[in-house]
Amino acid sequence: MVIRELLRHPETGLRPVAVIDDDSALVGTSVQGVPVAGSTSDIGAVAEQFDISDALIAMPSQHGRVIHRVLQELREQAPHVEYRIVPGMYELLSGKVGVNRIRHVEIDDLLGRPPISLDDEGIRGYLHGRRVMVTGAGGSIGSELIRQICRYGPASLILFGHGENSIYALERELDRDWPEVPYESVIGQIQNGSRLEFIFRTLQPDVVFHAAAHKHVPLMELNPEEAIFNNVIGSRNLVNLAREHGVTHFVNISTDKAVNPTSVMGASKRMVEFLVQDAARAADPEQVFVSVRFGNVLGSRGSVIPVFKSQIQAGGPVTVTHPDVVRYFMTIPEATQLVLQAASQGRNGEAYILDMGEPVRIVDLARELIRLSGFEPDTEIPIRFTGLRAGEKLFEELLTEEERSRVTEHENIFTAALQPLDSDVLDGVVAELTSAALAHDRQLIRALLSEFVPGCQLDGDGQDAAPRLPARRSGSPAQPLLSN
Image (cartoon, rainbow, N blue to C red; front, side, top):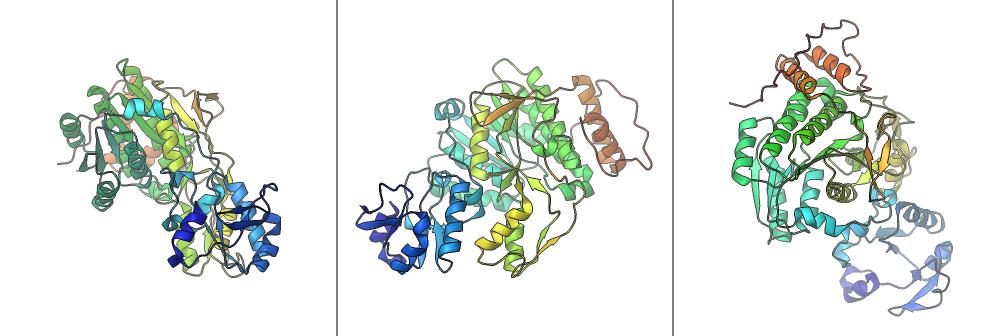
């Protein structure tokens, strides 16, 4: 397909003259009149023989390790050759390859795994013909969820977000790519219970994907009350209204930072998992409330990749917190497709864990990105270690020892045996967190989270001057946070 497209578009300045393939049976044959001249071990000789200036990697179904090996051969045997890539299967859902799709190799290409096999019918079963609401719709995860949901023919979309510019950009994209899908844009904040109630009453969503959250670990360490307002109180408003208004599927996007959290952000997201579990217990039989937990998403807002790219463009240094820090990574389309799949499992109250593959050292990621940008790491672009930030771990976990992963019908999705909180106790601690946040009592917020979130260890959580925790008020109702 690539060769055919290039032959049709000579204006690209790219003329296909040779093919490389590791299938020895193909060597000596031709594709569209272009000879298969050798395998990857012959790259240097083929590049010299045909005076190659560019290499196009057309292996969209291969995982990152294979792409990485091909790049290494290119760098070693033909360092003068520019290389580009045909995007992976996630970007080629239409099955078409166009010259405008050929781009420079990105770090996603090297970390990606084999394409995920989806149960499209299972996903279509709960999305087709339904009114689907996505909170945080303008964000990187929320907007990709919208794109993926459009493929399954929803009756309408509710784009809920507080950033008007990102929602506006998403509107333009939907108008261009999915003109047949009706949508309603709602600018609002999930902390505003009365605003949310109006949306549920008037737009009547059937399915809710909850992707709205404060997620920057260091910023939430400095502003813990905002993590409570948005992540905890806002999510409590949302799950309660979803249950009351008969939403059939509620899907909470969670994080590996909720496991044995060392940050306020991670602890607040664990509280959201408790709230979703609690709603599941009170839900009607036809309702499903689940959480989906995964690690870092490549290219999402606040991820290391955009930061590294801007630092490389500025000439360095590229800053890494610690030489041994490792993280799990997924591409945005991969994560959102698995979220849709997990929700189709239909097990009320479950917490799903996505298979994140092998963890990656951040310093290795930085060095590879520097090479992909055309520079040599540590010489042309230096790497500087800055030390772990507040609330940051050397490595993240997807499960605690007590949660014990169980397999599902899908090979890339597991479930965690989460221990729920008693409903009255949960109501009480949410009420106390709300009062502490309204009073800007950051020490008490940390103390409450440390007491109630399993495995939680927060720096500066009151060890020097521990506040006296208020007596437990079983069943104390948490007041909704409403804006005037």
